[in-house]
Length: 351
Image (cartoon, rainbow, N blue to C red; front, side, top):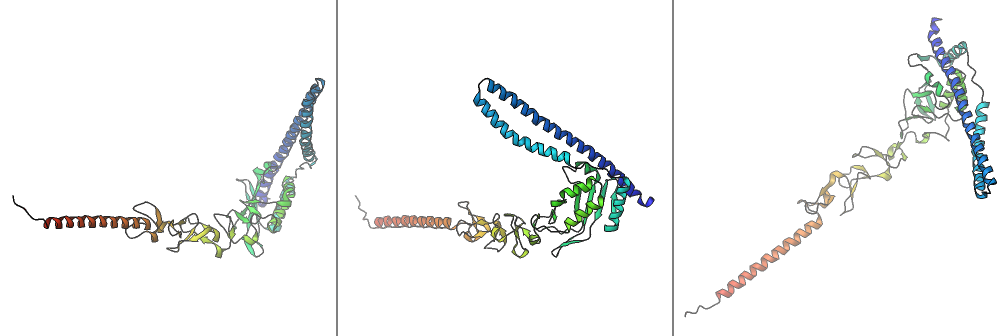
Protein backbone atom coordinates (compact mmCIF):
# COMPACT_ATOMS: atom_id res chain seq x y z
CA UNK A 1 0.00 0.00 0.00
CA UNK A 2 3.00 2.32 0.61
CA UNK A 3 3.64 2.15 -3.12
CA UNK A 4 0.36 3.95 -3.71
CA UNK A 5 0.56 6.38 -0.78
CA UNK A 6 0.82 9.41 -3.06
CA UNK A 7 -2.03 8.10 -5.18
CA UNK A 8 -4.31 7.87 -2.15
CA UNK A 9 -3.37 11.30 -0.80
CA UNK A 10 -3.88 12.93 -4.20
CA UNK A 11 -7.19 11.05 -4.58
CA UNK A 12 -8.36 12.41 -1.22
CA UNK A 13 -7.49 15.95 -2.31
CA UNK A 14 -9.38 15.43 -5.55
CA UNK A 15 -12.40 14.04 -3.71
CA UNK A 16 -12.51 17.12 -1.47
CA UNK A 17 -12.25 19.38 -4.52
CA UNK A 18 -15.13 17.55 -6.23
CA UNK A 19 -17.21 17.95 -3.09
CA UNK A 20 -16.47 21.69 -3.23
CA UNK A 21 -17.47 21.70 -6.91
CA UNK A 22 -20.81 20.10 -5.99
CA UNK A 23 -21.38 22.85 -3.44
CA UNK A 24 -20.42 25.47 -6.02
CA UNK A 25 -22.99 24.02 -8.43
CA UNK A 26 -25.71 24.38 -5.78
CA UNK A 27 -24.67 28.01 -5.35
CA UNK A 28 -24.97 28.49 -9.09
CA UNK A 29 -28.50 27.04 -8.96
CA UNK A 30 -29.34 29.49 -6.18
CA UNK A 31 -27.97 32.36 -8.29
CA UNK A 32 -30.04 31.25 -11.30
CA UNK A 33 -33.14 31.08 -9.09
CA UNK A 34 -32.53 34.62 -7.85
CA UNK A 35 -32.11 35.89 -11.42
CA UNK A 36 -35.29 34.11 -12.46
CA UNK A 37 -37.17 35.51 -9.43
CA UNK A 38 -35.99 39.05 -10.31
CA UNK A 39 -37.29 38.67 -13.88
CA UNK A 40 -40.65 37.51 -12.51
CA UNK A 41 -40.84 40.54 -10.21
CA UNK A 42 -40.27 42.82 -13.21
CA UNK A 43 -43.28 41.26 -14.94
CA UNK A 44 -45.37 41.86 -11.82
CA UNK A 45 -44.31 45.55 -11.73
CA UNK A 46 -45.15 46.00 -15.42
CA UNK A 47 -48.55 44.40 -14.80
CA UNK A 48 -49.45 46.92 -12.07
CA UNK A 49 -48.21 49.85 -14.15
CA UNK A 50 -50.14 48.67 -17.18
CA UNK A 51 -53.36 48.25 -15.14
CA UNK A 52 -53.04 51.76 -13.68
CA UNK A 53 -52.41 53.29 -17.12
CA UNK A 54 -55.49 51.63 -18.64
CA UNK A 55 -57.77 52.64 -15.73
CA UNK A 56 -56.67 56.28 -16.00
CA UNK A 57 -56.95 56.36 -19.76
CA UNK A 58 -53.22 56.82 -20.32
CA UNK A 59 -53.24 54.83 -23.51
CA UNK A 60 -49.89 56.14 -24.78
CA UNK A 61 -48.25 55.01 -21.55
CA UNK A 62 -50.05 51.66 -21.82
CA UNK A 63 -48.67 51.17 -25.34
CA UNK A 64 -45.12 51.94 -24.15
CA UNK A 65 -45.49 49.40 -21.33
CA UNK A 66 -46.75 46.85 -23.84
CA UNK A 67 -43.68 47.41 -26.04
CA UNK A 68 -41.37 47.13 -23.03
CA UNK A 69 -43.01 43.89 -21.93
CA UNK A 70 -42.60 42.50 -25.45
CA UNK A 71 -38.86 43.23 -25.36
CA UNK A 72 -38.50 41.82 -21.86
CA UNK A 73 -40.28 38.61 -22.83
CA UNK A 74 -37.44 37.66 -25.16
CA UNK A 75 -34.95 38.27 -22.36
CA UNK A 76 -37.17 36.38 -19.93
CA UNK A 77 -37.42 33.43 -22.34
CA UNK A 78 -33.61 33.33 -22.62
CA UNK A 79 -33.17 33.26 -18.83
CA UNK A 80 -35.88 30.63 -18.52
CA UNK A 81 -34.15 28.34 -21.04
CA UNK A 82 -30.82 28.83 -19.27
CA UNK A 83 -32.37 28.01 -15.93
CA UNK A 84 -34.10 24.88 -17.29
CA UNK A 85 -30.90 23.64 -18.98
CA UNK A 86 -28.82 24.20 -15.84
CA UNK A 87 -31.33 22.39 -13.65
CA UNK A 88 -31.67 19.56 -16.19
CA UNK A 89 -27.93 18.82 -16.31
CA UNK A 90 -26.84 15.69 -14.56
CA UNK A 91 -25.96 16.27 -10.94
CA UNK A 92 -22.35 15.55 -10.04
CA UNK A 93 -22.14 12.03 -8.70
CA UNK A 94 -19.08 11.86 -6.52
CA UNK A 95 -16.76 8.91 -7.20
CA UNK A 96 -15.34 6.76 -4.43
CA UNK A 97 -11.74 6.98 -3.32
CA UNK A 98 -11.14 3.57 -4.90
CA UNK A 99 -12.56 4.76 -8.24
CA UNK A 100 -10.13 7.68 -8.37
CA UNK A 101 -7.11 5.55 -7.44
CA UNK A 102 -8.13 2.97 -10.06
CA UNK A 103 -8.27 5.77 -12.65
CA UNK A 104 -4.77 6.86 -11.70
CA UNK A 105 -3.44 3.34 -12.12
CA UNK A 106 -5.11 3.12 -15.51
CA UNK A 107 -3.38 6.35 -16.54
CA UNK A 108 -0.01 4.86 -15.63
CA UNK A 109 -0.76 1.77 -17.71
CA UNK A 110 -1.68 3.82 -20.78
CA UNK A 111 0.55 6.89 -20.55
CA UNK A 112 3.34 6.00 -18.16
CA UNK A 113 4.15 7.57 -14.82
CA UNK A 114 1.69 9.99 -13.29
CA UNK A 115 3.29 12.93 -11.46
CA UNK A 116 2.02 14.24 -8.11
CA UNK A 117 2.95 17.51 -6.44
CA UNK A 118 1.10 17.19 -3.16
CA UNK A 119 2.32 20.57 -1.92
CA UNK A 120 1.11 22.41 -5.01
CA UNK A 121 -1.87 20.01 -5.25
CA UNK A 122 -1.35 19.09 -8.90
CA UNK A 123 -1.63 15.89 -10.92
CA UNK A 124 0.30 15.69 -14.20
CA UNK A 125 0.73 13.42 -17.19
CA UNK A 126 3.46 13.84 -19.81
CA UNK A 127 2.56 13.03 -23.40
CA UNK A 128 4.76 11.46 -26.03
CA UNK A 129 6.32 13.85 -28.53
CA UNK A 130 3.54 15.25 -30.71
CA UNK A 131 3.90 16.01 -34.42
CA UNK A 132 1.33 17.36 -36.87
CA UNK A 133 1.97 17.41 -40.63
CA UNK A 134 5.73 16.89 -40.17
CA UNK A 135 6.04 19.68 -37.60
CA UNK A 136 7.24 18.47 -34.20
CA UNK A 137 5.97 20.20 -31.06
CA UNK A 138 7.70 17.95 -28.56
CA UNK A 139 6.15 16.54 -25.41
CA UNK A 140 3.59 18.35 -23.27
CA UNK A 141 2.79 18.20 -19.60
CA UNK A 142 -0.95 18.21 -18.84
CA UNK A 143 -1.12 19.62 -15.32
CA UNK A 144 -4.39 19.49 -13.38
CA UNK A 145 -4.69 21.99 -10.51
CA UNK A 146 -6.88 20.37 -7.87
CA UNK A 147 -7.58 23.63 -6.03
CA UNK A 148 -8.86 25.21 -9.25
CA UNK A 149 -11.53 22.55 -9.89
CA UNK A 150 -14.07 24.63 -7.97
CA UNK A 151 -13.85 27.19 -10.82
CA UNK A 152 -14.70 24.55 -13.43
CA UNK A 153 -17.84 26.40 -14.61
CA UNK A 154 -15.84 29.54 -15.46
CA UNK A 155 -12.20 28.48 -16.00
CA UNK A 156 -10.18 25.46 -17.09
CA UNK A 157 -8.40 24.00 -14.02
CA UNK A 158 -5.48 22.64 -16.04
CA UNK A 159 -2.59 23.84 -18.20
CA UNK A 160 -0.83 22.48 -21.26
CA UNK A 161 2.89 23.07 -20.75
CA UNK A 162 5.33 22.56 -23.65
CA UNK A 163 8.43 20.73 -22.41
CA UNK A 164 10.33 21.04 -25.70
CA UNK A 165 8.83 24.25 -27.09
CA UNK A 166 8.64 24.81 -30.81
CA UNK A 167 6.43 27.91 -30.78
CA UNK A 168 4.88 29.58 -33.79
CA UNK A 169 7.20 32.02 -35.51
CA UNK A 170 4.63 34.79 -35.11
CA UNK A 171 3.81 34.20 -31.43
CA UNK A 172 6.04 32.61 -28.79
CA UNK A 173 3.02 31.92 -26.57
CA UNK A 174 1.45 29.56 -29.13
CA UNK A 175 3.17 26.21 -28.57
CA UNK A 176 0.63 24.12 -30.52
CA UNK A 177 -1.97 25.15 -33.11
CA UNK A 178 -4.61 24.75 -30.36
CA UNK A 179 -2.61 25.89 -27.31
CA UNK A 180 -2.00 29.53 -26.42
CA UNK A 181 -0.61 30.80 -23.11
CA UNK A 182 -0.75 27.17 -21.89
CA UNK A 183 -4.52 27.05 -22.41
CA UNK A 184 -6.15 24.51 -24.71
CA UNK A 185 -8.78 25.43 -27.28
CA UNK A 186 -11.09 22.57 -26.38
CA UNK A 187 -13.61 22.86 -29.23
CA UNK A 188 -16.04 19.93 -29.13
CA UNK A 189 -14.15 18.58 -26.12
CA UNK A 190 -15.46 21.35 -23.85
CA UNK A 191 -18.40 19.41 -22.39
CA UNK A 192 -16.73 15.95 -22.25
CA UNK A 193 -13.71 17.47 -20.45
CA UNK A 194 -15.89 19.12 -17.83
CA UNK A 195 -17.91 15.99 -17.27
CA UNK A 196 -14.74 13.94 -16.86
CA UNK A 197 -13.36 16.40 -14.30
CA UNK A 198 -16.65 16.73 -12.45
CA UNK A 199 -17.01 12.96 -12.14
CA UNK A 200 -13.37 12.38 -11.19
CA UNK A 201 -12.65 10.30 -14.32
CA UNK A 202 -9.01 11.26 -14.63
CA UNK A 203 -8.06 8.72 -17.28
CA UNK A 204 -10.89 9.93 -19.53
CA UNK A 205 -9.83 13.53 -18.91
CA UNK A 206 -6.21 13.02 -19.98
CA UNK A 207 -7.26 10.83 -22.91
CA UNK A 208 -9.59 13.51 -24.31
CA UNK A 209 -6.93 16.21 -23.97
CA UNK A 210 -4.23 14.08 -25.60
CA UNK A 211 -6.55 13.27 -28.51
CA UNK A 212 -7.12 16.99 -29.07
CA UNK A 213 -3.36 17.62 -29.00
CA UNK A 214 -2.83 14.86 -31.57
CA UNK A 215 -5.45 16.32 -33.91
CA UNK A 216 -5.24 19.42 -36.10
CA UNK A 217 -8.41 21.38 -36.80
CA UNK A 218 -7.66 23.83 -39.67
CA UNK A 219 -10.86 25.78 -38.91
CA UNK A 220 -9.81 27.02 -35.47
CA UNK A 221 -6.03 27.17 -34.90
CA UNK A 222 -4.36 29.99 -33.03
CA UNK A 223 -1.72 29.82 -35.77
CA UNK A 224 -2.17 27.69 -38.88
CA UNK A 225 0.40 24.96 -39.57
CA UNK A 226 1.08 26.50 -42.97
CA UNK A 227 2.29 29.66 -41.19
CA UNK A 228 4.05 27.97 -38.27
CA UNK A 229 7.64 28.47 -39.40
CA UNK A 230 7.06 32.06 -40.48
CA UNK A 231 7.73 35.31 -38.67
CA UNK A 232 5.15 37.96 -37.97
CA UNK A 233 5.85 41.42 -39.39
CA UNK A 234 6.12 43.79 -36.43
CA UNK A 235 4.26 46.51 -38.35
CA UNK A 236 1.37 44.89 -40.23
CA UNK A 237 1.33 41.47 -38.50
CA UNK A 238 1.54 39.51 -41.76
CA UNK A 239 3.36 36.19 -41.38
CA UNK A 240 6.29 35.82 -43.75
CA UNK A 241 8.73 33.01 -44.47
CA UNK A 242 12.29 33.33 -43.25
CA UNK A 243 13.65 34.31 -46.68
CA UNK A 244 11.11 37.12 -47.00
CA UNK A 245 11.75 38.51 -43.53
CA UNK A 246 13.79 41.70 -43.14
CA UNK A 247 15.52 42.69 -39.91
CA UNK A 248 15.66 46.39 -39.10
CA UNK A 249 19.11 47.10 -37.69
CA UNK A 250 17.86 50.26 -36.02
CA UNK A 251 14.86 49.06 -33.93
CA UNK A 252 15.96 45.38 -34.07
CA UNK A 253 12.61 43.96 -35.20
CA UNK A 254 11.41 41.80 -38.13
CA UNK A 255 9.38 43.19 -41.03
CA UNK A 256 7.88 42.03 -44.32
CA UNK A 257 9.07 43.46 -47.65
CA UNK A 258 6.19 45.95 -47.79
CA UNK A 259 7.07 47.42 -44.39
CA UNK A 260 10.84 47.65 -44.91
CA UNK A 261 13.37 49.35 -47.17
CA UNK A 262 17.11 50.03 -47.21
CA UNK A 263 19.34 53.05 -46.80
CA UNK A 264 20.46 54.15 -50.27
CA UNK A 265 23.74 55.43 -48.89
CA UNK A 266 25.04 52.65 -46.63
CA UNK A 267 22.70 49.81 -47.78
CA UNK A 268 21.52 49.10 -44.21
CA UNK A 269 18.12 47.35 -43.99
CA UNK A 270 15.60 49.48 -42.11
CA UNK A 271 11.84 49.52 -41.53
CA UNK A 272 9.71 52.32 -42.92
CA UNK A 273 9.34 53.79 -39.43
CA UNK A 274 13.11 54.08 -38.99
CA UNK A 275 13.78 55.38 -42.49
CA UNK A 276 14.01 59.06 -43.42
CA UNK A 277 13.27 60.53 -46.83
CA UNK A 278 15.68 63.24 -47.77
CA UNK A 279 13.62 66.33 -48.74
CA UNK A 280 16.08 67.19 -51.51
CA UNK A 281 16.85 63.95 -53.35
CA UNK A 282 13.85 61.96 -51.97
CA UNK A 283 16.07 58.94 -51.20
CA UNK A 284 15.21 56.80 -48.13
CA UNK A 285 18.14 56.75 -45.73
CA UNK A 286 18.88 55.62 -42.19
CA UNK A 287 19.34 58.12 -39.37
CA UNK A 288 23.11 57.57 -39.38
CA UNK A 289 23.29 58.87 -42.94
CA UNK A 290 21.65 62.22 -42.23
CA UNK A 291 23.10 65.61 -41.35
CA UNK A 292 21.76 69.06 -40.49
CA UNK A 293 22.56 72.07 -42.64
CA UNK A 294 24.56 74.65 -40.67
CA UNK A 295 22.61 77.52 -42.22
CA UNK A 296 18.92 76.47 -42.36
CA UNK A 297 19.01 73.61 -39.80
CA UNK A 298 17.15 71.30 -42.19
CA UNK A 299 17.93 67.59 -42.01
CA UNK A 300 19.05 65.98 -45.26
CA UNK A 301 21.01 62.94 -46.33
CA UNK A 302 24.78 63.19 -46.15
CA UNK A 303 24.97 63.13 -49.96
CA UNK A 304 23.04 66.40 -50.05
CA UNK A 305 25.29 68.18 -47.56
CA UNK A 306 28.60 69.56 -48.85
CA UNK A 307 31.96 69.52 -47.05
CA UNK A 308 31.19 72.87 -45.46
CA UNK A 309 28.01 71.45 -43.93
CA UNK A 310 25.61 73.27 -46.25
CA UNK A 311 22.68 72.06 -48.30
CA UNK A 312 22.53 72.90 -51.98
CA UNK A 313 20.11 75.77 -51.48
CA UNK A 314 22.22 77.39 -48.77
CA UNK A 315 25.35 76.77 -50.83
CA UNK A 316 23.83 78.64 -53.79
CA UNK A 317 22.69 81.45 -51.52
CA UNK A 318 26.21 81.77 -50.14
CA UNK A 319 27.66 81.80 -53.69
CA UNK A 320 25.18 84.50 -54.70
CA UNK A 321 26.07 86.47 -51.60
CA UNK A 322 29.78 86.10 -52.35
CA UNK A 323 29.20 87.20 -55.93
CA UNK A 324 27.28 90.25 -54.74
CA UNK A 325 30.04 91.13 -52.32
CA UNK A 326 32.64 90.74 -55.09
CA UNK A 327 30.57 92.96 -57.39
CA UNK A 328 30.26 95.59 -54.69
CA UNK A 329 34.01 95.43 -54.01
CA UNK A 330 34.70 95.67 -57.76
CA UNK A 331 32.35 98.63 -58.12
CA UNK A 332 33.94 100.41 -55.16
CA UNK A 333 37.41 99.71 -56.59
CA UNK A 334 36.42 101.08 -60.01
CA UNK A 335 34.90 104.21 -58.45
CA UNK A 336 38.06 104.87 -56.45
CA UNK A 337 40.22 104.49 -59.57
CA UNK A 338 38.05 106.94 -61.51
CA UNK A 339 38.26 109.58 -58.81
CA UNK A 340 42.02 109.16 -58.63
CA UNK A 341 42.32 109.53 -62.40
CA UNK A 342 40.24 112.69 -62.39
CA UNK A 343 42.32 114.22 -59.64
CA UNK A 344 45.56 113.50 -61.46
CA UNK A 345 44.33 115.30 -64.59
CA UNK A 346 43.58 118.62 -62.84
CA UNK A 347 45.98 121.77 -63.30
CA UNK A 348 47.07 123.58 -60.22
CA UNK A 349 46.49 127.38 -60.58
CA UNK A 350 48.42 129.76 -58.28
CA UNK A 351 46.87 132.97 -57.15
